[in-house]
Image 1 (cartoon, rainbow, N blue to C red):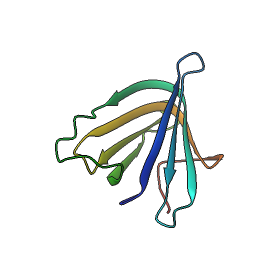
Image 2: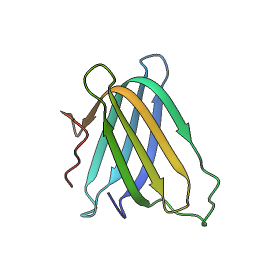
Image 3: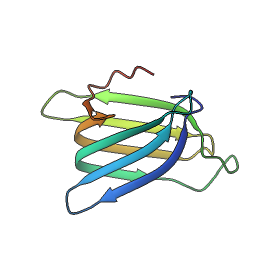
Length: 100
C-alpha cells in the first residue's frame, strides 16, 4: 500500500464500522471497510509534514475470534490503527494478507 492515497475515513459509530476510501498505485478507487469495530486510534499531528500518502501498512489476522487489525503509517509520520471483527476490501472478505 506504499504511496496509496488516503481520500477519506468514515466512522459509523452506530453500526460500528470504519470505511477508508483510498486510491491505489494505479489511481483506482478502493474501499476498505472494517466491521465490528473494537478499537480506533488516529494520530494526525503531521510529524514529518503534510501528506495524504501511505508510507506502509501492516495487517494482523488474529483468527476468527480475535478479528483483524491494521496499522497504517502515513507519510506524515502519523499512525492509524484499526481493530475490528472483520474487514472487506472492495466488498470481498479480507484475511490479513494484502494483495495490491
